[in-house]
Image 1 (cartoon, rainbow, N blue to C red):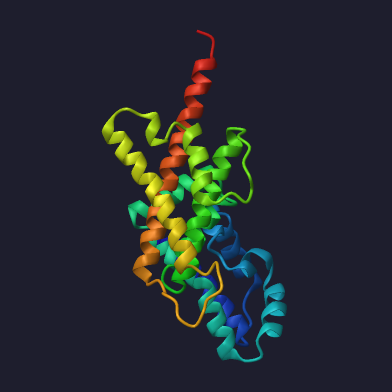
Image 2 (cartoon, rainbow, N blue to C red):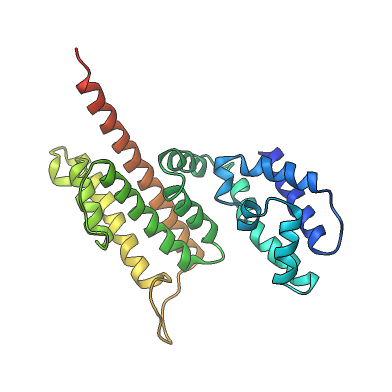
Length: 252
């Protein structure tokens, strides 16, 4: 992890230098870019221009037209690299790393991207983080239903979407007789209802009047952490079900 931090810092410093008048070696940019974009997990946290600008010349053409002074260029680059550094620091957290690994394996393009966005926005944009947490759960539910070939309405609200998915994964409380399982699964449904409600009331998904409640960082952290933990549970359950079906179909 320290090696990746050093490479990220080197890339950021190189781009800041190029954006503020220094002449840097193109080969250094190419080497650092290849190292960082080659890591599937990191790609979701890299600035868009690192993924799209294949050379320093392409980056220079972008930055020189975007801002006409050095101060704005520096601020832009520091802001754009912040999600990457936060991820690299948080990657040492076993809980975050576990969720990250599971969602990356399940679906890197949509599900993991929603998780990355939720993590990124917790401090600077709590409302956006809550919206991303809701999007994460919605994406997981839809991916699982697609895998099960279950038809659903694209515009279905999250609680109804979750209920449909839970029923097909045998995660509905009424499908179990053990009280402890009914309580746990009922709690999962309550989490989904809660995140959907918080998203409607406190996120950036709707317009606001002059007076409205604003979520704090702690509210965003709770919503994101709950959504991440529940998503991993759903993915693990769907994977286990698939493995059981494959095993049962093998000739004895």
